[in-house]
Length: 263
Image (cartoon, rainbow, N blue to C red):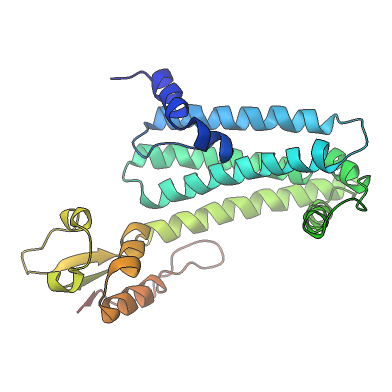
């Protein structure tokens, strides 16, 4: 069996171009939790180093020396967050999902640090908008808005309060997403109603003793059925069933569910 170091290295060797193009996040669904954590730590470390370099910028900020590097950092973190969300939603390994929770917390932390970086905010204020095209100007306007909302121009005490609120918001958001994943509903359908689904899908959804197949509101089931099932009634029923998974404002799953459906 390959060591963790070999798994990480091989992942970047095989997917080097993808990793480069998409912010160094590329990974394999079969990667071990340890290797995924090591890969994520590498991404976070590189992002922090690039962020520190950007905050020490002394030249007049331009598109090339400031906007593009800032966008690269944000894109890299967004891609890592996207793969975390995908794995959290569909990965069957509880150990991997636990690692993802740790990585998600680290991503939230660095995102808050970026948004609250007064140094970045003041550099952005010093940027000359005149040479920029409309898309770049919109990019700048959104960052200025986010810096302002994060309290970058407030006095120290209010900034601390804003940070505490952002941390709390991130915690509740993770809990909300986790509860939506855990709060699965299910419905029973006849095998003939899934005739358009792939052999791989059917292998993971065996026929029960009563002759029915169970579909769940998981991301994997939902996307497969919505994309490939030709039976309108199945797609409609599963869509409505997914909408019955709700959380209260604190992120707790609601108990007001309808009974499991059998078609």
